[in-house]
Structure formats: structure tokens, C-alpha cells
Length: 365
Length: 61
Image (tube, rainbow over all chains, first blue to last red; front, side):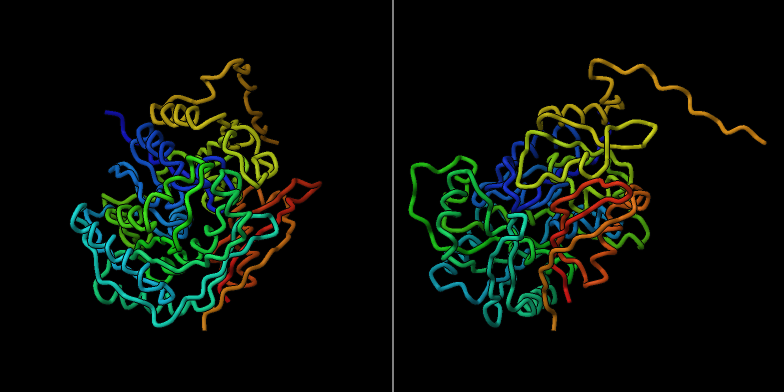
């Protein structure tokens, strides 16, 4: 049995990625990379498919702020048999929609055997709004973040070891933007505000958290893109969050003594990210730490933050650059497998460059 | 009381600094304005002696 090669899969949220920019539509990629690496660390945008999810012991569900903290070497990850999931509801959710969500909690207990509770409603609306940045990517605002944090602290004090948060998002989104998204052509307008909510809770509480938006149901359309379809199967987006959190790793301060079951950034053998979206903290930390970064060209997005734009060229010994280019996720999986087997991925390409000249050794005066 | 602030920021980093510590260069620039909660480079270019960067971020202030 080959030793696993811990690998991070990043697909940034809210930048219209062709794969992973919709409703958990990068899950097949995550499953493939988990098989290739034997240990995959990824974030909710990749793994959440509303009513759909995939549970795999080799896949570690880590919220984005926590993933950045892990990449910075601030936190380590430790495995967890079962989290006790506290559930935090935004007071802005109307009674019927809240009932639908409460029934998801019952279903998760009855059908999946998850440990759910306590449950709490904030002491007033969180006030979520969505907007776009200058780049066109999805961003958002929270009018009352302290209400979110106060409720999160209460849940933690009441015994929750992980928190699923459900916030009411505005229904009156730009209809042309929503239509484009459902037809597979636009940005996920909710993604930016969703990230703020879960980032804030994880930063404050230091436990796994993830978010599901509460929205009024939409009328069905014939042109629905398959990548967005998972969000139209049920009344809520909550099931995948509960499953993801149920065995999510805990966060341990890297200043504490190391325990054998913990995973640290120093053990990570590869980071896989879209070739045009290399400007997030985890990828930059990987560049800084000389961890191989596999840049996937086929996953286009709004951004053109490529290795070339960042001044990072091909991997070679002279410049210590560590970016490997893959045309697709299938090729990226082959590269991860090669790294796991101790094969230099560059040896698989033709033509193969002539071995570089020996490094000059400075002569003594 | 905790407040969140959305910003867009442009900066130029000397190439030697950029190539050894890209993440730290961005984080330091943001920390001078608040604590970064969510951020990313949204445009960038290698120029003569510097790396030009455009960041979008939400800060805790």
C-alpha cells in the first residue's frame, strides 16, 4: 500500500469557475483526487451539492478560513469520529422555510445517524446582502455580524463541536444574473456572502463551521444547467453541510505539541487549483513553501491570475519554481499519483529537456 | 463593535520580496488596514522591478 500524499484541492468560490462554480459540481474531481492521493483536503465550495454529497474517509472537509490558517502553519488538522453539530438559524428565516430546515435536521438524525443539536435562532436578522467586486467576483455584506457571533458562542458553550449556519439570503437578486447562473453562464451571486459568514464563525470559535443559504423556492426551468441542478432538488441546501461537518477534522493550534493523528502543512505534497485563480492565500503559501502547485488550465474563471502573471514559471531546479501545468483534472490526478509514487511528473512529458549544466561553485579567492 | 469593510487595494512589491514571500507580502499590506477575513489577488502583472497586484478583500475593522 503506497503512503497517502496529502493534497489540497482549491476551487475558489464566486469567480464563475467552469468546474466547481455551481452546485458541488467539482465533487467528481474531488473523488478522483482523493483516490489518486489517498488523502484530500478541500473546502465546502467543492464538496457541497445542496441535497447531494459524497462521504469518503479520504476527503477532509475544511472551511476556507481554516484552510488558509492550516496553509499558514497556524492550525493543524486532527481527525474526528463524529462531530456534534449545533445549528444556527438566522432570525430572518420565515416560519415555513424554518420548518423545512428543522425537518432536514430530523432526517439527518433518523436517516444518517448524525449527532445534531443544540439549535438556536439569532436574536435578530443577520442582514445578509450580496454584491460584486470590481473584478466581477461575488462578495457580500453582513449588517449585524455580532448577532451571528453571539449565537455561535452560545452554541459552542452548549456543547456543539461544529456549527451549521443557515442565513436568509435576499430573493430579489438580479434576475438576469440568476437566470444566467441557472443556465450555466454566470457567477454564483451568493458565494461571497456565504464565505464571510463561515469565515467569521471559524475565526471566532475555532471549530468547524459551514453555511447553507435559505431561499424561497424557484419555478423550474427547462434550460437548467446540470452543474446547477443539485440546488433545485429539495427545499434546502442543508444536507450536504451536515454530512460534511459530521466528520470534519478539528483545528489544533500548531504551537501545541504535535499528536500522531494530526495533519500539518509540512506534510502536504501537492496543491491543485485552477490555472487562472492562483491568487488565494493557500496557493500563495504553497508557492512560498515549495509545495508543488498543479495549475489546471481547463478550469477557466473570471480571473487571469496565472503562474506567468504572478512571475512563477515552470518547475525547475534553477529557479525553484514549483508550478506544474495540467490541461485537465484527469491529468492533474495523474500528476498527484506520480508525486505519490515518487515519480517526477516532468519525466512523463516529451520532449524531455537535456539535463541542465552543473551549478557553478564559487572558487575561493 | 465588530465591523466588516470591503476594499480594493493596489500595491507594488519589489520582486525579491515577492518571490520569497508572496502570501506574506499581501497579508502585511492588508493588515495595515484591518484584519483580513477574506481576500484574493484579482489581477497581477510582473513589471520592471516590481510585482503589481490588485487585491479585493473584506477586513475586520
